[in-house]
Amino acid sequence: MRARALGRLDPVRTHHVDGSALVVTSRDEVSRRRAASAHVAAAVIRALSFLALGLWAGPAPAQGNFSQQPGFAHHYAAHPRRTTPATDDERMLLQRHRPRLWLPAGHVGPIDFYGDYIANGTLLSADGRVQPNPVERTLLNRLKNDPQAVFTHRPCSGCAQPRAVVFGRVDNAPVPMGNGSERQFTFLTYHVVFRHSGVPAGLAALQAWPMRLVADLDDWHQLDHYTAATVVLDESQRPLALMLQQHNALRTHLFGEAIDGQRVQWPADGRVPIDVAVRSNELFPHRAGRQERRAVRFVDADALAWLIGFGTKPWFASMDITDPAREVDYELDFLPPDDAFYSFAGYLGERRALPGRDGPPGADYNTWPTLKPLGLQLLSGYWREGDRGDFERLVPLLRSERDPSHAARAQAGEFAAALRRLGR
Image 1 (spheres, one colour):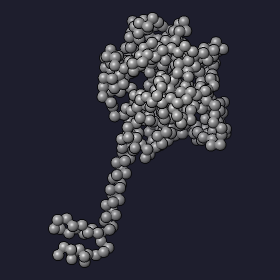
Image 2 (cartoon, rainbow, N blue to C red):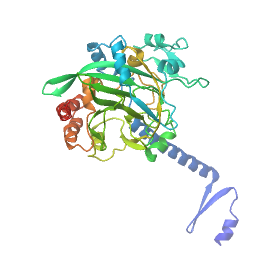
Image 3 (tube, one colour):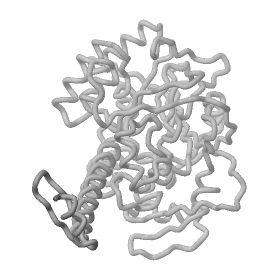
Image 4 (cartoon, rainbow, N blue to C red):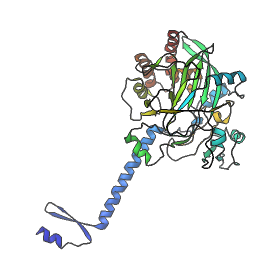
């Protein structure tokens, strides 16, 4: 009976048999349901995408550009930027200790900021006026104090591969040692420049796939110039530490102490080897073969607990991958610290709609204003994997304080004790 009834049903309608009931649905209704399902699926994908984007990119500051965070203006008013490049003696010191850079296979490598990146693109002032092309250093510096100025890079498809240029500078700064004492150290900082920055190559599939639907994971934002390595020297110009910028934080390694069971030793040739991570360009101490390095977008209490080894992995955490295949040659150049490369208040890359994908300001805006003193940057990144004392000093402070400089100062005594143990 059912078969005969089904045989006489209208061929332009879709029919479903549910037990003894016959449910008749028009094709228009099916189309509407499918469209509604597709809409819901798209909404879910968008939500997941923006969740993933927010977790890795983080919310944009309420003031817009990170250069406008409260505290920067006060810091640079009290500590004006130097207006001259490195002296001849400082250049010799920078040349002597310039790092050796190792790239993974297939990595295009660093570029020349002015000769390749800035020379190919468009610069807009705050009023939306297009500035003369090609953009060059003098013009960029003319607009360096404009927080709404935007430079958008347009890669030159027919140009030869640029020679890499790394910018070196020398700073001298006091470092707290606890109990009100301090020491004066020399900081040799080398900024490596990449055309764009990607997200960590070890990002979990559940995090990565929705992001791929709305963004290029290799070109997360234009320009990567926070990739900096700093060699720290003591009062006698003996090497003490290596400080590396990794995502939105810094990490300090004392020469002679261990990282993952291997000691970081000062090399005989005076040039510390450094690995560039796949896709994200983050810098890590050199180690042969494929390595997974823990990565977080910001170091808060939960993130630091996981990094040290006393906490579970946060959702937003990931792995940077290093797999050094070739050493890259580069030219060392010297800019005054007030140059636009360091001090540009606007956007040195394309403005993009999704959070965290705008181009960055100048390289000096690398951390929170309260951590701008180099001594506090050195201490803020000093912790050791598996060290219970570091965990107990730092994590409670990070959970209770909004000012990260408190956690940095908590490590001053331990940092001084570590130097004494190493005979420094």
